[in-house]
Length: 112
Length: 112
Length: 112
Image 1 (cartoon, rainbow over the protein chains, first blue to last red):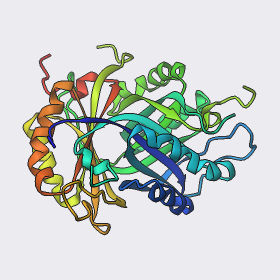
Image 2 (image 1 turned 180 degrees about the vertical axis):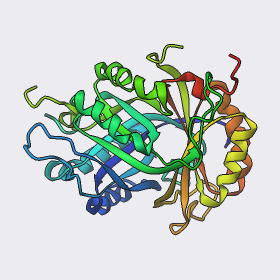
Image 3 (image 1 turned 30 degrees about the vertical axis):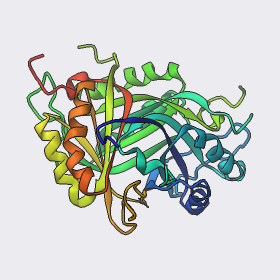
């Protein structure tokens, strides 16, 4: 594989309270997402939800961002997996276009 | 609102010396931007400005990144609000396309 | 230069084990990339490479992300410069579209 080629993929970032890190990781594992990077101890102010009167993030609550890169067909399953968490707790998911070196990093199958 | 739909928005990231965090937050507040996330204690090397002979960021100076997600029409007002800061001090603003779950997080109005 | 205009550029993010920070910075310096921001002490799980049986990132290994913004023609030289590192060690590079305020920050020439 030519290491000098960039491959279009989807970057997924999930911001959740620190206590829900394990829930997100379990979804990634179930979807055979082979790697991710975590930025911990983020500060910030919460968003007010449309249907809730409380601040989505407590200002004193630790939150973190979990980043991964996946093929496009993984985006919907991740969102579906996170829906129960988002339904009960704070958290948000961002999706953006990204090109990556080393496509093999992001492939769950080593046989391809 | 269908929580499994992703909505196109603009991600805005502002990198400034730590001492200017409050200035950026005040602009966000004035524009009714209801949430943001901060990554503190970034390291890095400064950029040399075109019209200045000094390094924009002192290498020993703490800087931070403030991230938010807004609708496209908020981008220009944020940039206008930051102009006085950027005119006198170091700092830069990045804008990129992002899709988000939970659009209500990023809506300043709960009536929509 | 109108500080209220946003300019299309490429954001490059490189994630490597902390010990290879210097290697990446040397490539940036050689390409006259005048500034970058580093997020240190990232956590995460490694990616398994296609051609390797070992985890690309040791889970206990510190890694960091080095971010910069460049014009499009710099992307390929960065990737070429990183190839020797990626050939022997773990690491990955992401490229995405971004618009920036203050284009002069990202211009290596002060004469333009």
